[in-house]
Image (cartoon, rainbow, N blue to C red; front, side, top):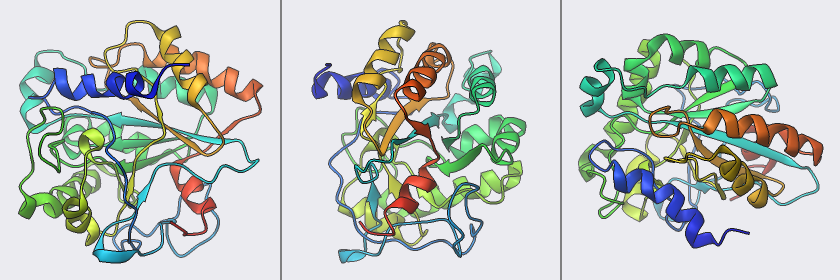
Length: 290
């Protein structure tokens, strides 16, 4: 089994190598706290129980947003595949020159395999690929969640990523939701993934007012800059447990073998008795408890 340090390094490299571009890194230690559903995003997820809005975690101390990494380890063998759609304001020229920050083939594979998934999208990605953002956001198989507008770090020293000013953190999250609505995704979920997975108490307090639950992960796929799809699949299959959240990427230039890895991961996990769900279902399974 691949040691945890190597698993973290597999994600860290995405932030370290493309620091100036702002792509995904690895998680910092989570300290769950408080959040409420945002009234501007009230629609429940397709697979969630009937509630007044998407499920979030219960309020906690110190005015911080809560943090979710995985569901309780029950006999229900549910797993959520999540995909970060990374892009920053500074990458428009590279996209115009032909670099692929999208991965429609991956989305098509998930549809063909009938795999529900949560896409953590940056606002800049939605601006660059509005048709894809809209079709993903309106497909009941998927849910769109927030990965910031700029994909700048919300802490210092986050694998070389540029840093959002403390006073701009909330507005960065809100700007992403505005970009989703403009692209035609009016009901993005009240879930937020910190760029690089890096956060601290100040960052959690800064985003608390947006009503989000911060979503981390417990399984690192290692798809960032990977060239061996089988190795990515093995790493996921070795790490998954009931209630797991798997972090992968929906950015072809930075994660070119993700589609092939997914095509190996899905049938094997189904053979082992797992079912695929969106993050909203895993959070719903907690009953709102942190």
